[in-house]
Amino acid sequence: MKNNRKSLRDLVSGSRYSIIGVVCCLAVAAVWFAFVQPRPAVAPASGAGPAGAASGRPITLVQATVVGHTRFPNGDTPRGGQGQPVDGIQASASEQIVYHIHAHLSLFDHGRQVALPRGIGIVPPRVVQNGFVVGGQAFYWLHTHDATGIIHIESPVRKLYTLAQFFAVWGEPLTRRDVAGMNGAVTVFLNGRPYRGNPGAITLVAHREITLEVGQPVVPPPVYTFPPGL
Figure 1 (cartoon, helix red, strand yellow):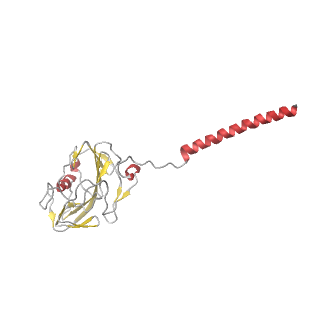
Figure 2 (cartoon, one colour):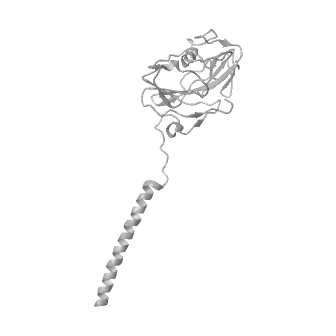
Figure 3 (cartoon, helix red, strand yellow):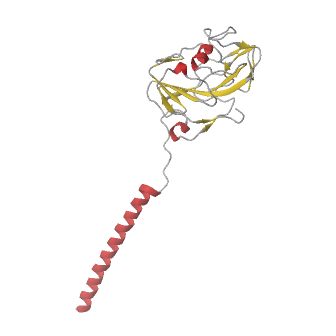
């Protein structure tokens, strides 16, 4: 009888330890799933712009490619540069190299990135090779060669040019409620930081990243790395 009682006691004790062991294993598994296991990256909402905008990882710009969705025709509008001086900007027969720097402009319309067209500030007929404008009748000191958003500042004199002058050459409006015909409240970022001043007064300095977002949602501004040599 004593042996039977002992066996029963051992069985109960063993069951208790087994239950404790199972509980501990479940607790460890819960912690592992919650904190340790790799989690899939969260993709940005559809049309919300490049993945780098959400992750903060720099996106390498590749010349002769398109960054964003194509909306605008290439070149200047009839209101913009057709060879005549525009807002103090001249069109030269060849590109100028005395002052040669690059800035970047990103455009978003209600969370959807829109490509800045190639050939802004380059007077036709334009010569295009593999998505890159290599020639034209004349070059304004502010122009684009491709649709990456890179603005080329190539001037015979060293001076500060503004975003308003670039839009004037393009022939598109730029206000706090209108960016190239995209209407709504405009949120501005400079190098990823909010900017609350007049967007037209932004100066085009070397490697400055300008982001103009029209309407909602306002997505995290993308971070770019300029191509080698620019």
